[in-house]
Amino acid sequence: MKRITCILLLLAGICLISFPVLAQEAAETAAPEPVAELNGANTAWILTATALVLFMTIPGLSLFYAGLVGRKNVLSVLMHCFMITAVMSVLWLVFGYSFAFGDANAYFGGFGKIFASGVSADTLGGLGEDQAIPEFLFF
Image (cartoon, rainbow, N blue to C red; front, top):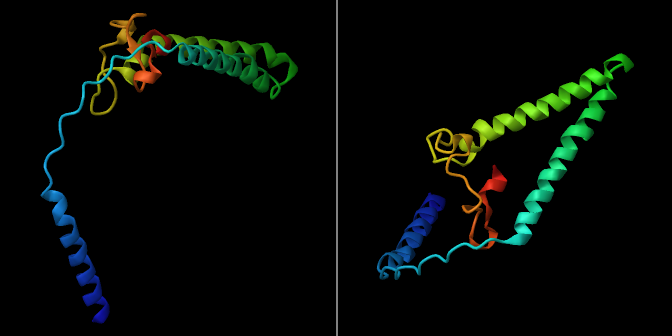
């Protein structure tokens, strides 16, 4: 009984302490957000990371899988990995970018940027004004 009383008194005290927060005046309106500018270092990093992913996929993964099969199937495995990379790149260009970065939907992005509609070298993307890179690099 003493423990329940202590817990209830503690909760009541916390609630009473938090009431002055509700009496404060509203904060002033925030300053307008600065316009994003192109950041060359971030652009170079995105291009480097893209090249590293392709180097990981085509020769790295292909040669790994080729080592797991017999001698007569090596060329087939290499071609499968190359074709999977090519097909996935085309699917990303056609549908994936729009689903990932399109207008938000309940489950996934919209169809607004399918086939790169509305994506140009002039539009900037990124997480903030200091991380702006051309949106076409995401594409």
